[in-house]
Image (cartoon, rainbow, N blue to C red; front, side, top):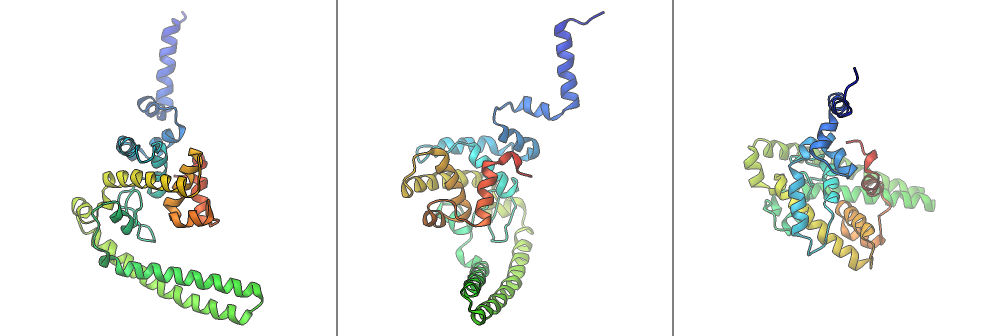
Length: 265
């Protein structure tokens, strides 16, 4: 005896859900955006962020209309939605804000003097990277003696950086992770995912306006991509290069945004 067509279709649907559980997520969070589906499937803890980011996009739309999928992707790339993420450069939270930027946007962040040792580390990093660049330039000019001098100086600065970086990172993590979640978020709002979501969209709107004006662009996709790269590389670098700085980290960040389906989260 053959089953009625409607019953066969119903049983086929049920079998599909049992055999492929991710279909259930798609059914619950039905969206045509494959990037969002991927994030929700691979990072289910991202789900509470979505309505907050949507609300922030509406809030800052008068400043610049940022499509909500852009900040959604950026948080996935920045921290995989980890509110306690701390980068090697001391960027904090799910949106990975540096303290000065978060403070400029109105977030509650400890006073600058609390990050003095961290700033010393970042200064040493800039110094040894600059010396390595000078060494390469001297080598290309054929001045082997000067290249060797710059290389030795760069190695000394890098060793100082590595030692201080390890100490400051260890000390800072011991301090903040000894706090409760609420204490940590009160101490530094960058640890609060609700604050981070709002800050990210606000800052993206500011960057979009700046990129559009300074580089005289009209294509929204181009503006959004360069604003996102500016979020990662700094707006000054994007303006100076009139586009994506040819630095591996910045190019990789742009590629992740453009080819998000290939991103391994």
